[in-house]
Image 1 (cartoon, rainbow, N blue to C red):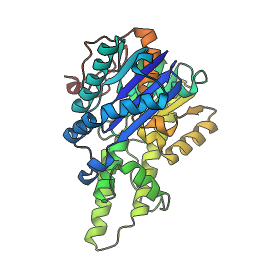
Image 2 (image 1 turned 180 degrees about the vertical axis):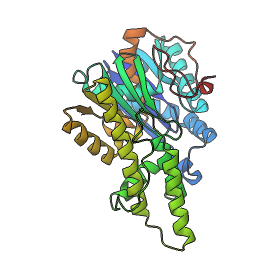
Image 3 (image 1 turned 120 degrees about the horizontal axis):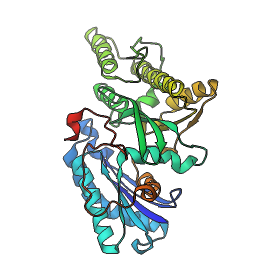
Image 4 (image 1 turned 120 degrees about the vertical axis):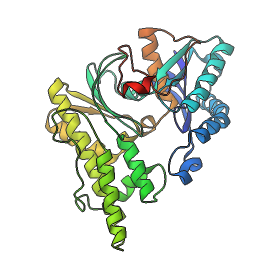
Length: 348
């Protein structure tokens, strides 16, 4: 079964073509980083306009890469829930147009499901249910128990800033550019992670919640103090100390969940899952405890169409096609259990 997947969730326009949920024939991504860099973050209206410009070009590029046509597709899938509303609308409109023109089933995918299934695509059958998934990205930091296809239980989430969001805000304060994650990681490799004693928020709390707002504020105050004293900023040390604090919290909470829930398999997903320190630290700590870890390839960590197509293959078999009436929602419950992982007002 060949499925075409479209993702316009945020600031990347992507189309993937995947066979039977695992074999990737194409995964084309058009980045908008240059369009947003001068603003230090994503401007929703600009993102939507760029998607409109890019989506047909990326569709053509993906079909060419796969050596296929629309007529070869068995279904079309699209991220329609969770993201920037104006951006989502572009992808949903394109997917509906293809489904109507080619008389194809249409499958709506929650963006977080795409990230979850990026691991299933690459690691099935070793990654068997139930397993734990730490999803870390610019807009999300949450711990989920994946019980079955489409069935997710919330174990913990961030109360404020997501980890990736904190990276971007620190990078903007240091005038490093956008996106902040890769830039800070590169600088941190040359810095001293113990140079600054930044807090590890909620690391000793018995719950599985996260909070990165206080850590972000602590880093900004350290920067301001150095600036007021007229001292040069040790950017590499600041980055290394900040990153170490984030990783310590993420790994500690993840392992605590595994122990409490009796889960032996841990999956890592989302854009921040590309972070080499996070991967190495989690892998080492899990191995010491006899646990197995799974991570997607870098091109499946970032927002991409292949993960949408891959997730659609599995979820279509378990809940059927969505139909042409699917909508685009900036915030939406997740999965068959309608899991709400944000404040209730976000879902209105």
